[in-house]
Image (cartoon, rainbow, N blue to C red):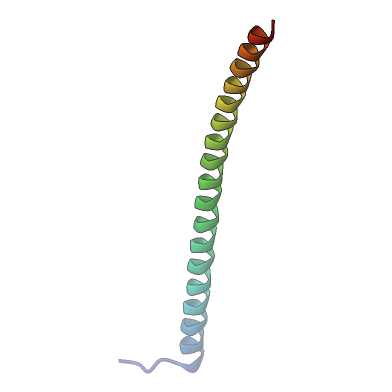
Length: 69
């Protein structure tokens, strides 16, 4: 079996470093994407809650106006 040259060894180590960096970047992008999805769900939940509170306020206002009339 032939001995690997120094250039081949360096190329392998560079390729490994690039692969690790690419993997790390992919993992980070996935985490950011998941965080965005969670934020979107929380915003939808808060919007629903605000709509519910608006309806309650309208009903209370209506009842108060009828009571004062």
